[in-house]
Image (cartoon, rainbow, N blue to C red; front, side, top):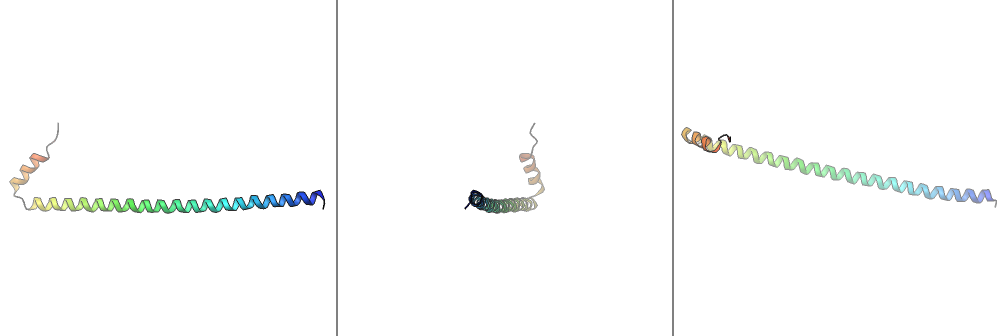
Length: 89
């Protein structure tokens, strides 16, 4: 064997090892990106659910207040508004 063949074989082995590390790195990167995308999707779904729950609670509260006001006499409504909703100076 000549020096050129030995150096060629060593170069080929080094290239194969470097290629294997490069492929492994790219696979690891794609797995990490997929995991991050999944986590973002789950967080967004949880945030949307929380907003939806708050909206339902606010709507229910407004409906309860509307029903209470509808059943009160006008004088009681006026008194409640004057007592609870005065402008702070």
